[in-house]
Image (cartoon, rainbow, N blue to C red; front, side, top):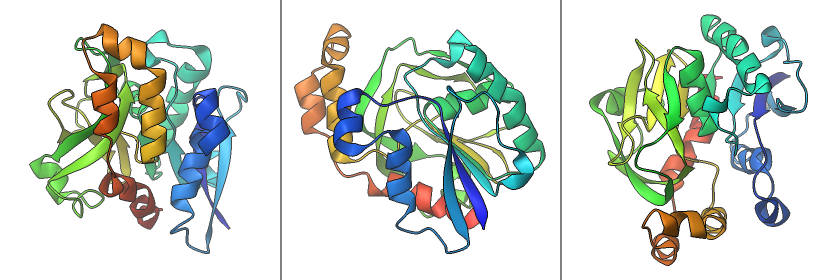
Length: 238
């Protein structure tokens, strides 16, 4: 049976894990609704297990978010870069999310760092570029769609040769494509409405400090099923 690997790059907040599951569980819940019989999902915790699976044993790779920062260049994170470069060179289907998005961009020659405008949290509108409207993974999405976001760092400089698929007023690189079957997104397609609200609640003080209204952000959290559909649609490319 072919394996789709979830690369776990961190843990969600404890209260989120207790109520809804950790990052990999959120991915698994979404994928289970459309997982073909010939595919199975496995999890590799990259922070705790330094030995990556051999690429030739995998059919596809999904990379989770993390509360770590790519620019901190932690050894476990830096060790992932050549592995990801090998995956890209072998045309391995990949989809990176949040930290995974920033890590893929950094691994392929871009720059990920703190966003000068601060943190983006909540449900926000993301817009497809012309390339995004023509992309095989993104083309079935509406031109503008709601997405759950929680990040302090962003892809500040996209790798040379990659394609920008989506953006919004906060972030010029909400979605990128690096090769025929290699994508990454800044937003969280695995988040549900309750998980997004739990993240805003945990970040209440930080958001207030940067001049935002956490109660208003929480009230505006809405369904983001279009963004969520990317996870199951990705399986068609595996």
